[in-house]
Amino acid sequence: MARRRRISPAGFPLHVIQRGNNRSNCFLSETDFIAYVKWLNVYAKKFNIHIHAWVLMTNHVHLLCTPQEDNRG
Image (cartoon, rainbow, N blue to C red; front, side, top):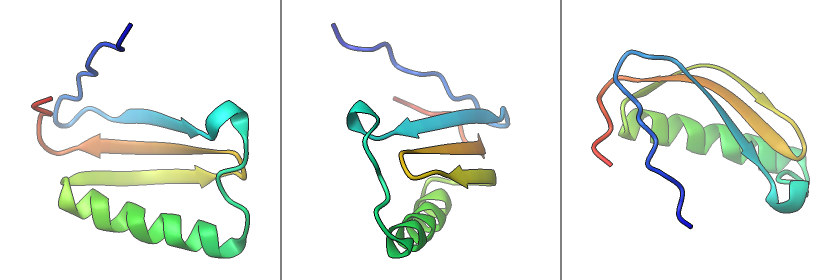
């Protein structure tokens, strides 16, 4: 069964968690962490999302972010 669409209204902060498949590592080197932060910056600008804080662990990521526009699905 598919997951329901998530509602992300503009101006409301979200705590986003991303985990590796079966909790396996997402980052294997410092280069991986650096690349992720660069992509996070690029796509936050592209989709108009403010990133307030992030924590990058070897097998998961926590983001505190606020979308500036309502999602349209």
